[in-house]
Length: 237
Image (cartoon, rainbow, N blue to C red; front, side, top):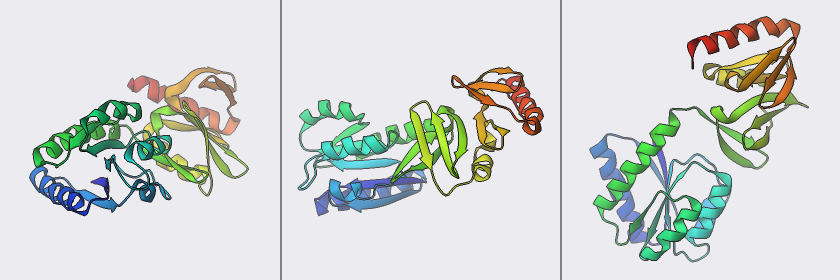
C-alpha cells in the first residue's frame, strides 16, 4: 500500500493524476491511496509524515511548490517528492530538496508511470529496514531503527538517541516500544533503556558503550542482555 498526496490547484490536472494513478494501480497490481490538496499551505497544515509519495505542483497561489517542499523536508526526510511543472528550468532547484523526479505538464501517463516505477523501487529499498514514527512535540518524524542508538525513559517520556539527534515522545511506555523494536535487535539494559545491539562497541563490567555513550547494565538485566548480544553477533546480522 502506498499513500500518495497530490498537491495541485488545477482541477483538471487533479483529475488526470487520479485517473492515471488508478490505471497504474490496476496495471501494476499495487494499492494506492490518493489524497488531494489544493495548495501547499493545505498539506503543511498539521503535516503528518505518513505519505510515501507527494506529487507537488510548483506554481500555486498561496505557497509555491519549492517553499512547500523545503518545509516538508524539515519534517520528513524520506517521502518521495515528484514535482509537476510546465517549466523545465525548475528541475535544477529541485535538487536542493532532494526531489525524485519532474513531470512536465500536460501530464502524460508514460511520464507518470516511469516516475512511479522509480519512486516505488526506492521506497521498497528503505522499507526493508524498519521505520517508526516518532511524535517529537508537535512534529511527527520517520526514524529508521538503524539510526537509533538507544531509547530511554525520562520523567515518563521516551527519549530517542539517534544519529541525527535527540527526540522525545510522550504517551508511549518503554514496554510498548520494546515490543515494537524486538524484531530489530534491541535489548533491555536495565528498566530505563533499550539498546540497539548494532551500535554496541564495548561491554565492560556493568557498563555498555553504545553510540559513544556509557550506560549502566542492571544485575537483573545483564545476563539476558549479554545473551541477546551474543546471539546478534553470532548471526552476523
